Amino acid sequence: QVQLVESGGGLVQAGGSLRLSCAASRNIFSFTGMGWYRQAPGKQHELVARITNSGYTNYADSVKGRFTISRDNYNNTLYLQMNSVKPEDTAVYYCWAYKISDNYWGQGTQVTVSS
Image (cartoon, rainbow, N blue to C red; front, side, top):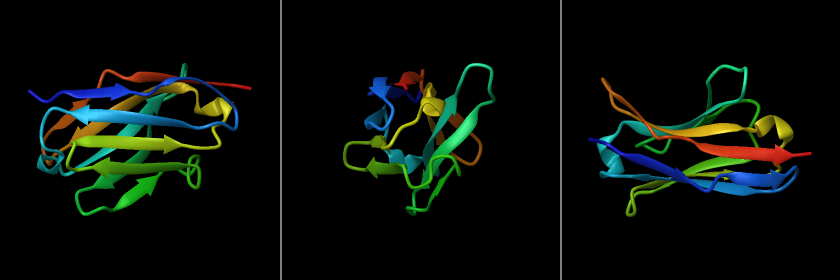
């Protein structure tokens, strides 16, 4: 059973910063990659950022230059550094880990950006 536990969400003013963390219950090298999704009210689930075991990263156009995904392999933790946040970044953020045939999700953490 894989567990992904997010933390770090909360209320932040526009232009501010926030760092999300995702602690995995197993060695994160057991996954092909990890990432962050988000879902805002009334909107579709959106891939925010992804990082593979080889270190390849990709980002949604809406967050490029503002968000940075990283991983701490020793502590089996995934991060999302969010800078220059905007009200449209308000959403529930979900940690995601995947293998060829499986996907795993955290319970989500709420991020609210006030204008």
